[in-house]
Length: 152
Image (tube, rainbow, N blue to C red):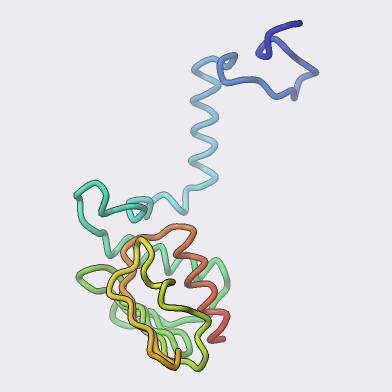
């Protein structure tokens, strides 16, 4: 039996990283960066608090704006505030302040206690929400997407 990196089944066969030379790996990284070029400016917002650098509110804002645009959500930006029916997302010294007033929000209190959310408050009748977003990751995108869909 041959070692795995010696297997080949044609020109387009998958190869292990160990069998790639440095030039091929560099091209692969360049290609990956080109594919994700629009996301790179706000990568700093991922886990920003972890490295002691603080929270990059502008990067978070750009990330949310790009996310909403990519989902073809109609919104307005006025003086560092994104507005969508029933939703307001504004820059705050601790992150992005998300405020929502809408009936029967699809949330429970524990949704606001997760990593990346700060000072979350959900009204008892689930008609009002206030939370400061401090990180931007998959869980935060799903949270915002669920609320935008609900309030549409």
